[in-house]
Length: 398
Ligand code: PMP
Image (tube, rainbow, N blue to C red; front, side, top):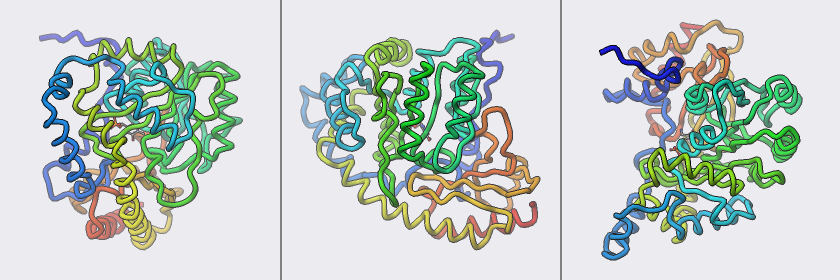
């Protein structure tokens, strides 16, 4: 069959992390590649209790097993509105301003789908979340990188690029970014809100990691500085409860959320009602809060151990970020011609350890000498073993 795939698919390849996850599924490989919570850090007892209660109520269960509304279950949305108000300081959100989505990933997709036409420009931090780049490409739009420091976007570069490319949107992960782990300062967030409002640029604020802070003080979301209604705030339950339940929320201006609802109608009608209620109950019973409190010291310890091992075993030219939370550490082999993508399969084979090559996260190429490590999923023992092996491997490659 000569398949006549859409033009949209022409420049799309599979996500690098998803491909690496396939490679390491063979088993026996230490993975620093994914962005997964550790298996023993999923709140299993709490999940069992919540699901047990839901299943026990036959009438309520029947309604969950029917079709639901695209916006999401009202009581769940109310719990979410309260959550983003209490935990993030986001106020002024009513039921019309929030939609339940099937993972933050769908929230990003709906936001882009609602706004982007072929040939549109989108600004992103360089480097940024690789799946956002993939979605932008899928809408035949083009991503342009904005320079960033460890404290946020370079505001002058942001304004220059807005003038140069006339972008419709800016996509950012301002807290414990994927891939760098960096966090924008409050002042930087305010400046982003003001400049994008001035030029009529929509902001997609993707914030799945904010609750995973184990050092330093919380920073308010860009959304809290939004006076023009140009910020879409997305946060997910994947990293703080379970990725498998596929529940997240998107909050924004009523008109924008309505468009996202219409887009979602064409994708999956609505997010699984059972999953929504699980997330809602985890919020209202205080389980999310308690669970986060429980896992933070464990993540902190793992991150500190990984930093210690990277400092001890990596070549001299290697430097890395030291994030105050999240799931990732971002490294660079300074001044080295190493191509971390080219040597990845060798690393998996000879070290039994996998990472993600940095190139995948850059709009417009570059970053061959960069690398992303996840520290939440591997055990402490495997962090030591894997980084030690990778350190020796990279010393011979740089
Ligand atoms: N945004 C970022 C920055 C992510 O790192 C991820 C997951 N890796 C997602 C969105 C998607 O997460 P989910 O769909 O599970 O909420």
